[in-house]
Image 1: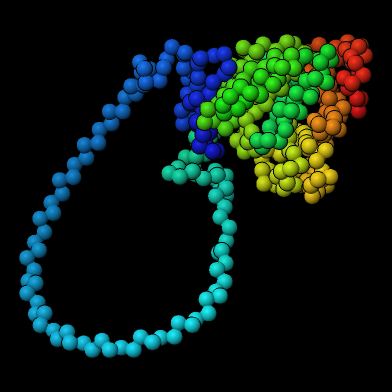
Image 2: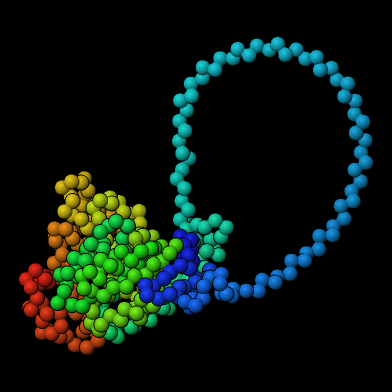
Length: 365
């Protein structure tokens, strides 16, 4: 269960794996074997034999022998000839102003849930995030050992991150290996689009869940087996809320914001933009047709996160792709050098660039 939004990951499913994950309120999880079909021999006979045999044998034998012989011989011959010709020409132009905005995100927990006190919510969230962070740390250690540059791509639905990812893979072909984990509530459409480029991809369907977590990624990585020194792109479920709080073991969160969404998104969803290292301002080819204020958007993002890097980009026109690829290249080189313990000036991605077609060359910063 994600206590931030109330979603459950009972239906999370990694492509090619019949097993799923069940998450309890305290953050612990267990994996359902494919042979375990819910409701078909799957034993959840938890013992709830609590004793509620409270003794309510209170004595209520109160004496109510009051005398109610009241005399009701009242004279009801009232004269009802009242004049009801009241003037109702009142002016109803009253100003019905709202007393004030509602803020359920204030207080100890930073959010609210019906039936759960803020202190209880904080404890549950800490348990869930602590369990997730433990697995994320193992993911990060594995990526570091193998020199894998892992990126967590986050955005609203429809920001264009899958199309951008396809273009990125096409431009990196022959330069650096790329593997992809796709996250959606249902379907494998995006994974199929990625596989059409020749890159290995695996789909995670989260069911009712609104974000990926570290255990899902660990399971997917085990099946995907990205090669050493590669880029691992993790395309998270389209959502600017919950993915901000769940570490997957990535090197960076990259938030994709399209110019069709509005300049105020960073201020409306500050946790996500604060957690991201890089913002890709996408679909800038559409700017001539919109009233989007780029400078205001950038200012809003830096108000939330002064150190965030920003690249204006378009998967359609190719604008900004070279800068984005150069950013990836630096990350790959750092990951590889960390494993090697020294730089590799004429090998790896730098050497591959010289042999790549001109259109696939990565621009140096």
